[in-house]
Length: 115
Image 1 (cartoon, helix red, strand yellow):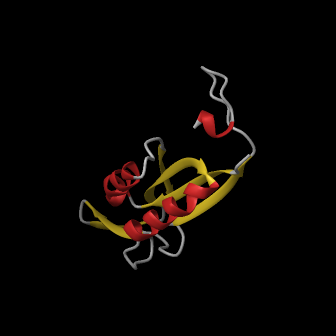
Image 2: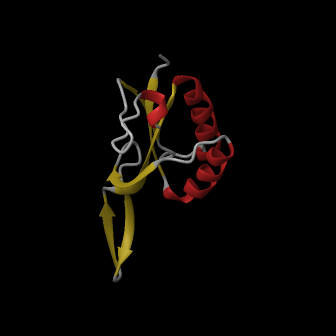
Image 3: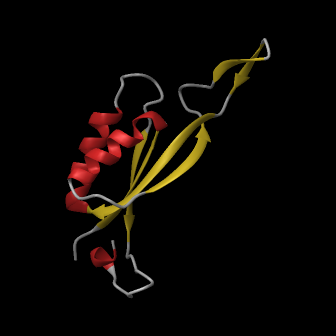
């Protein structure tokens, strides 16, 4: 049985539609999008509110979760790296997590058939 991976991409929201369109072209039509906040090398940003400068430590991002076969994961990662890379701090991270099994509740399908 081919290995299954969960791909977690945490990045800026601006490129989401372009990423979705590119992944749709290779047959990836299912993903979960989660609004998240956090910080890394960016260390936050300064915003002005009612004339006062405020240091905002948590930066809003999105997390995209995609379940795929290991063979298709490299293509997904390649597309994500190409589209999401601006060369600036804050482009994000891609994390690969092995999945033991997936079960579709409605049909009881398992493994890659359940994706």
